[in-house]
Image 1 (cartoon, helix red, strand yellow):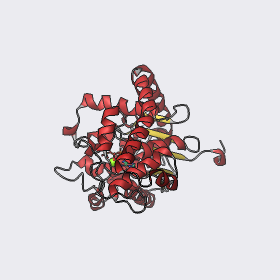
Image 2 (cartoon, protein in one colour):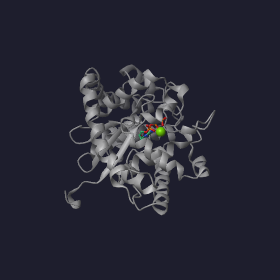
Image 3 (tube, rainbow, N blue to C red):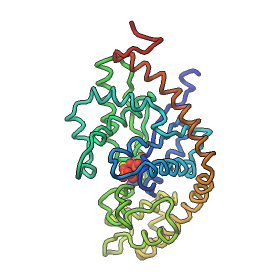
Length: 339
Ligand code: ATP
Ligand code: MG
């Protein structure tokens, strides 16, 4: 296919631990769905990340979570006829490239990358190497763009650094990817504490922190009605404090309404009413997703067939590329040795 007709390729994913939440939906999944026509998309269930802390997840649970995440991707609107959806560990080139890249990554550079929140307690070598694995996920597919939330900008900068370092050491095979930062409703904060981002990992231990995509109507209501708000009564995108602002941003992202219309609708209304409106909106958004999810999840054969086709397609792109990369670093690669 001529280059100008080829759609730009992007890679995104989520690690199958905890439960996908409304922040993942508005910040990631919703825009992934919207990207499918414009870009050639590869969506991975990033199971290799999930074993970075082996005490935190057992093998059977990880296998189950992997299917849950894949089914939720589909239920949210990822279309397997348009996009490739696959399990990261089913494409061995991710691990192979991660090794090559870890050898050219200075240790000090990695130590700076580890998130504060994840560095409490023991840090496994795998945790330290996560940014390298992320770089491998992206560079393996020669991707031009990485759709990310604000929370991940530093990772893309790291990928560009690794790409430049590979190119200067070996051969110009790596493209520096550009971040595609989402504009609206980008970052949803914790309902219990609007100073931290809503996260699967925090939600696993703190009730009321997040709204899970599979939460019941009762759970959704409890989480929103008890969301932290300040004692005031201002409902304004500009002037409200963090807790109310967070609810407004979520309202905006799910309703598709303009900020002005939302403020007009809620002018002189109580925080309680804002929360009630939001409960209805979240429940209406999640109901069809949950229905579709249970249909898909109940048909494991169908789900596994989609994932097998996805992995096969991903390997078709990844395998020739890893062969080229191996050749460039000096491994003997069978048919196509460089000398
Ligand atoms: P974990 O605690 O396991 O890191 P997470 O909630 O941060 O979980 P990820 O799997 O790291 O989720 O991220 C998946 C996608 O969701 C990424 O594209 C990320 O930018 C986006 N995302 C994560 N949290 C939020 C949030 N609170 N608001 C908007 N987007 C988010
Ligand atoms: Mg995260």
